[in-house]
Image 1 (cartoon, one colour):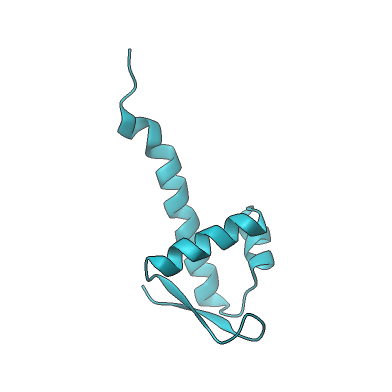
Image 2 (cartoon, rainbow, N blue to C red):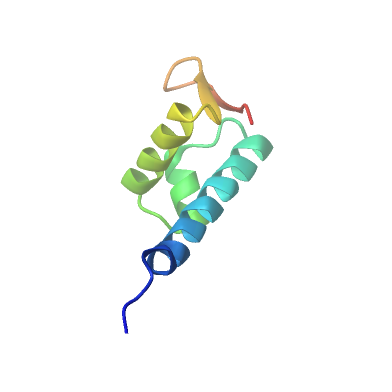
Length: 77
């Protein structure tokens, strides 16, 4: 019996969407949150959080306002 491709990807896609939603919620509550704080809150590595933030920026979901140190995140969608 062959697995349907959409079924095989289902849990990973749902997990990624949930991660994006969790990051957006945390950023909305605390705009100056750091990648390290996000990683601890959601159980990812800092590099995993960095990757998710970059994808979210590319999709227009969030943006960084100001410099890396002293700036903050803004949820757009």
